[in-house]
Every structure is written in structure tokens, then in C-alpha cells.
Image (cartoon, rainbow, N blue to C red):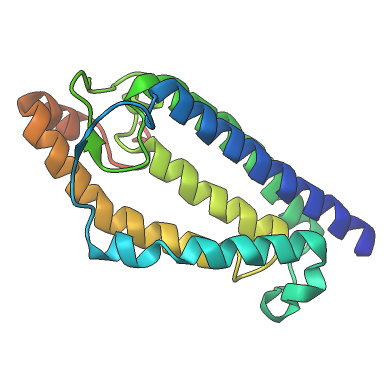
Length: 198
């Protein structure tokens, strides 16, 4: 329905705005643009995937302006599933804010360590080692459900999944190098992406 499509477009726009605000605030709290940090090589897969967000950005803008511009990648999803996507988007926003709150000054969008870096094991990090990755994957699932567009949603989900799968071992090797036995014990006690159900 056309009137429902307006709701989905506005919901998607609001979701994007809130994610950007939370991420920018995370960078502000961490001072990631002002302080020198030790850099680590992220790997060729991560570098090759970097142009894809530009395509997703333009696809998203096209969808928000007029979904007919990206009709070639539209999937027919029932309204109840798309509304579920809006609910998931709300959960994602709250979870992302929680992750950033727990990270505080330890946040960085790159694989890097600051001189005063501490291992974060509070908040969502109490249950999983990489809650930010879990949240970003859930974000693109919500995007797919809201937009009913495989290019924007599943394209983004696939991109993030590939980056997460290739980046996680590198990140954990870096953290083992810096924190040693403390991180090794944390790895043994805490699952990577999803909390244990018991």
C-alpha cells in the first residue's frame, strides 16, 4: 500500500539518522579524530568492501525519495513483517546506544589500540565479545524488512557479514597480543556474537 510505504520510508530515514547520531557521539566520546593511535592492518577483504557503502548510500537515498527508483530490487513482504522490521530497528538503536555507552573512550571504527586502552567486559560485553557486530548485522536485517529491498538490506547484510567474518579473527589476535591471558580467559567465558542461553 502506498500510504504504508510512506511509513516505511520515514521509519528507514529516522533509523539512519539515529544510527549516524549514535555513531558520531561514539566518535566524539572516544576522541577518535584527535588522539594518535597505534594502527593495525585490517586486511584486503575489508579494504575491498569499503566502496560498497557508497552504493548502498545511493540506493537508500533513492528508496527514501521514491521506492520506484529501486523497484528492480524490491521484494514483496507482508506489512506485518515490515512492521516487525521497524520494531527490530528500535531494538537496534537501543542496543547500539548501549554498546557505545559501554565502550565509551575505547570505541573506534578501525582495528586500533590506544595507549590507555582497557578491555571492556561490562554492559553487553558481559554476554558477548563483539556486540557491535551483532547489532550492525541486526541493523541490516531491520533495513531489509523495513525497505523490502534486497539490494539495500541483504546487500548491506552480506557486506557486513563478510567484513565481520574476516575482521573478527584479526581483532581477537590483536586483543590477545595486547591483553594476553586476560583476553584468553574472556574468550573462554564469553561467546563471540550471541549470548549463551541457559
